[in-house]
Length: 335
Image 1 (cartoon, rainbow, N blue to C red):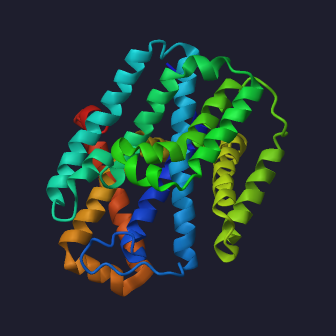
Image 2 (image 1 turned 30 degrees about the vertical axis):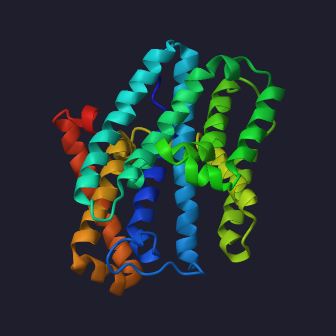
């Protein structure tokens, strides 16, 4: 069994909380235009909403990064020796929950959901299809990326990043099935995670002090990004760098959390991160779609309504996920 990694847990918990926060404000942001009484998305996005968009992008990339690191560790350690068994295990962990919750989501919200969404990634569940695609890709090409030279790895990383930035209509409108278009978008972050494990034993060009400094620099640039509107490519490079530097800066920053109540709470959220991810969105949609009172609460109270939604959705999904784990159904419902 692989050693528990508090750094991984901490990043995953931050990402989980951020995703719930983003979806708690999504109705007010006009993201769900197909909902009743939905406000129109503003041409000029308020600064807080712009930062939420950035934070959500970082959180999704963090999930992908962590998934790559854990799968690479398993591959290098021999835990995932067989390609077929690895893919089947990931299918059970990701596709089975997708089918269960995808069907439930479609049945609950059939009036606003098209069936083709189910084939391409219904609501927030697209992430499960996308990450499964990345696992399959990593398994099928394992001999290539495990044995490639640093120069080849560098070239491949640049190429996949360039592909991920292509805004071609064919990719966006014809490769939506099974979330292939989104898979192309997140390949660079996943490949970087694989390389982090591959070269973990080697000295990287930055000293330990360099990681926090780089983290501070990228954080500052992301904070001012909504004010100056950096080019999209540069913005995406910042997000990838931010996630990488956050992970590398943590070891000496969270040592005081170990063996404390804080670590126990982090572990609780981490164990239920998949359950929280799946459930919180469903809770929010149920409240917003079926309750006009809830929509009025959000529309009339601005950010206060969003924070109320966040606390409600987060703790309700955490409680339900922990309960489902206790009665031993999480294996089927959350992988």
